[in-house]
Image 1 (cartoon, rainbow, N blue to C red):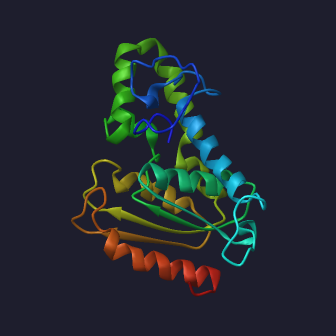
Image 2 (cartoon, rainbow, N blue to C red):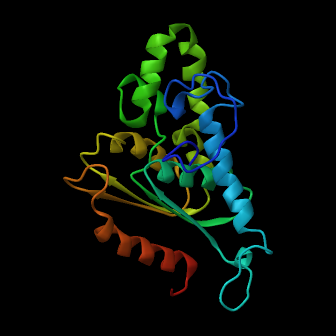
Image 3 (cartoon, rainbow, N blue to C red):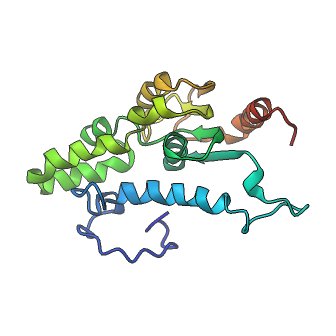
Length: 211
């Protein structure tokens, strides 16, 4: 993802680059970093669905295969956001310890990656109103009713990076087929080996196939 681990080129001339990437252009709804991430995730679906780019071992374009989106933490939030926004039919969303829920609460409570936004607002109190208003556009809770994909999610009950109480608010608004698996005593992950078989079985059930 852009500016993360230094592996992605981004030539955008952002403002506020002396802060972490979540603060880049944070006062501009059209060019802010969060919007770039959502656009990148949607663009990946365009690439995957291009019949000329990817084929399976039999030469069949992967564009003809059902779409599954997946990711943990920030990737979990993005997989839910693209499930809500994409024009493509997404069959399954495998979303683990999802971020990007109740963003304004996470800023105020200084939780996870949103701590840096609170730091930014302490330095720029004049921008607080517009910055906080912009967060509604990138909050999974507000997009959840649009999700049509089947969703299986996980949370750690003592996760203080992406507290489960925030994702539960989004989960309640998902109207498609869904499952949630809380892992007692776990924080922000650590239960992947336990949860992976459940995700596979869920996807098999939704797609009515074996793989």
